[in-house]
Amino acid sequence: MAALASAGSLAAAGAAHAEPAWPARPIRLVVPSSAGSGTDLFARLLAERLGKALKQSIVIDNRTGATGMIGNDAVAKAKPDGYTLLFTYAASVAINQTLQPKLPYDALRDLIPVAQVGSGGNFLVVSPDFPARNLKEFVAYIKANPDAYDYASWGVGSGGHLTMESLKMQAGIKLRHVPYKTVPQILNDLQGGIVKVAFVDSSSPLQLIRAGKIRVLALSGTRRGPALPDLATMTEQGFPFNTDSWYGMFAPAGTPAPIVQRLNAEVNRVLADPEMRQRFIQLNMSEMPPKSSEQFAQTVRSDIRMWSEVIRANHISAE
Image (cartoon, rainbow, N blue to C red; front, top):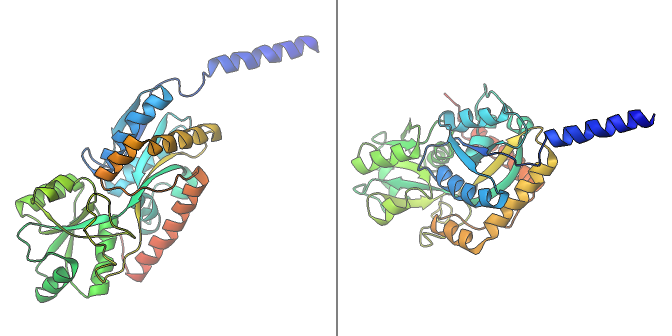
């Protein structure tokens, strides 16, 4: 018996030796958006600081397309060992879960919410020559010119798409949706006058707005952004839309709880750093109290329910 116990101890020791403490090698952070997008900006900002905290490099892997589904699916099907993580945006998780009937994964079953990063909204922007300077003027002009304008978003089922569809229903206006693959492509075409109206994230276009190359009319979400505090929300301008956007880190289902808890603690520590908080303000992301993994999971579940109501109320489909 003693020999057997000794052999078991040796086997356990061997197994422990074979599995070094996490993280023992670089971590891949999948970002389902293009380089230069708001999601990518925050992912790279977080990855740099988080990598230092974990004493391991974090490699960004941009997997664009299908309003986040390609990148999300890659992580949902990855080995749950803590070496493949996801940094994504609210709509890619909360909207796709209801809107996409052939979703190749289940966000509630196949992804573990690790940590929420920020809270905010999206911009309604127009080309500089568009004859409106606020949301009420925009609605009045579109009403006077029905079916004359298209609007762009970063894909069918994106937060921008659903926000505009909600505005159309509220205001009784007509615009045709033109789905793009990425926000940087939309911003390029706005500057060139190819498209006149769009919903985009509230970080990547800040320099263009300040330079007068595009004009912002409103912000979705429950509060104004810190980088443009004079910009009123849609609700403040008479067209209620009280759903916030966020970024977040996820892991494949089955990732060991200690790894999830460590990541959550380290991300929250990074977000609490004064220099990082200032950088978030510069990128127009509102501060939020730190959340545990389970609190973030509650947010995800709540947002899926909320967006499903928006989708049903506005008769929106993925087609």
